[in-house]
Image (tube, rainbow, N blue to C red; front, side):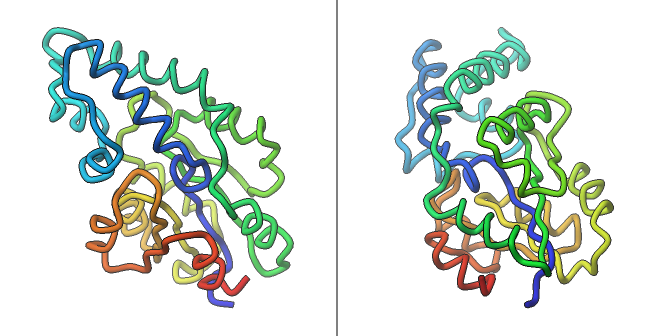
Length: 214
């Protein structure tokens, strides 16, 4: 077995929340008389840091603060995320990794850390993870620095640790940590964008499970 530890992204990878995130985003766009997005256009354009993505959509942060817009989204998301499903098949992978004496796993997310911990506990998933790392703010910026602190806690050769995510930012974070990456379609980025990373890209969790030899 090549990989000894899996670092999971949360939003879009474990949790199937792209449609929920888009619904909330479109509400904030419509409120400001800006053009809403289709899911296809969202996956073709969403990016990190989220504040810059919002600016490209027409948000004017000279007239309202990033904090106000970020809080508006996060408050709506936190109220609704409890009803957000997990990715189809992801629980089976988490269970198989947890049951393997040779593997362990953790979560690395741009979600604010207290909200992330609450979401993990609400779904009774904390038993699967050695630890969970989230950002110390609500702005969903880069998690590369957080990733470097995260990987330092894992006492394994870099080649035996795999980052699994659904965006090119997960790929960039894996590069910053010096570890391999695999990407799942169906989250916040289109397959076409994910394929530019030059790493394994999977249409579903069944393909990922085979890749992990589980």
